[in-house]
Length: 421
Image: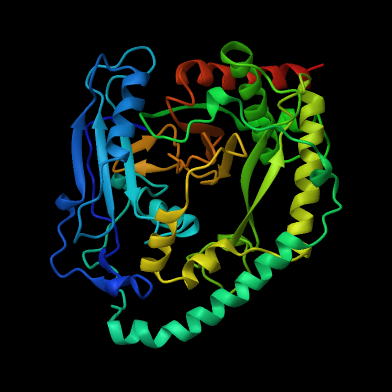
């Protein structure tokens, strides 16, 4: 979300958007130059509905986020939401911006780089936009080329499958795997999508650093997990029942460094190399200090095991399987009782400001993917001195999203109060 001063003055980004093609679903998607690019086809303006409240904005965001991208056009679109008359929760003159991108076109690392191009750290009034767009090498995909790649794809997929089997079947002796966990309560275990809901809050990164002092060595990720666990506990105390064993949370773990952390000469646009893990997050523990301590211990052990032991390279496996086959397999996966109650993905955006034209961003959030295996999906991100925690759920799993947002705030404040004692 950005606050506008004199209206949106938006310059085209210094990139040439391209068409995205995957011949017959056999090969990887490829970029080809768009010779008829018009930025007006990729930015749409909307008026905030309702009374101009934060709740109205969340509802409109979900509606826009679920609108399919047009076929035959580059796989990205900006929807800008004007707030002509806001209430106390949103300043009048603000603008909400949704960047929608097909995941097949960009993974998390590429999306952050793309967003930083569209939303630079300098206002449009202070930056000179080159007349000529950046020239990209056009790919020339073909069915014949995709067929020739199939043997190599099969070999790559088989290699990663053997690694995955080894990781799954290897004897597990870490304390994280000895914890007995609970299934999500029936009230949260919906397997059908009825109405998607979204909400979010922001907290001070400085306060997060204070909370870290509760458990020396803990990370901002650990703090976020503990806050989420505390919010789930509070919500279940009101609307269901808190299990006497911890609920599981799905997380992603990077197997390589990102962006500026990588070795000299590497590119920040190289995709993710990630794997997944399930962590018990102490929803049965009332004391925030003890909950954070257990989460830090478990996450540290799990990440060390994943870094040193057999690994399941999720992104590499996905890239090795032809998109058409991958989509067919996904459609055949039956919906089952969730084994984990939630998921948390962390995508930091850095300490630098972000601008939409000449409007400075005041908060940023992600709308994470939702699947029946994790009824509540969280997205954690940072911008300047604020940490954002957003969540997406189906209303059949989370009947009162506003109450859950309040639970997140109360859980964070509980941690902050504990850090002051």
